[in-house]
Amino acid sequence: MSCTCFLLEVGATPTPLDSEDAECLCVWLYRQGDEIISNKQQGYLLRTKQLGTDEGGVATGYSVLDSPYLVDSWPVEEHTSPVGL
Image (cartoon, rainbow, N blue to C red):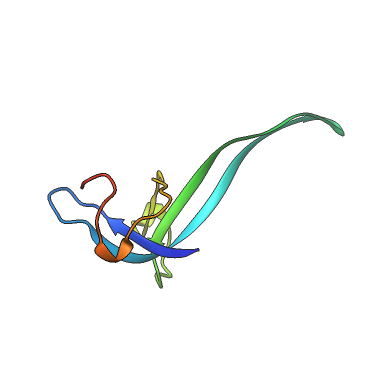
């Protein structure tokens, strides 16, 4: 998925970047033989990196792990932060 995200650095103005996201669901699966005892979604992982970056992931510094802040609508063209950053 491609979207606009904001690079947040201490003491700097938020900078809009074209980025791509990778989403992952974390699942708990417990079974005995063919019997499924428990199969539940336990959480998620969201990783973002700048669009067009073919380098490695979080450990190499080319992407970040996210905690998404979801809104119904937000005027992205104004480049304002929903949390007043």
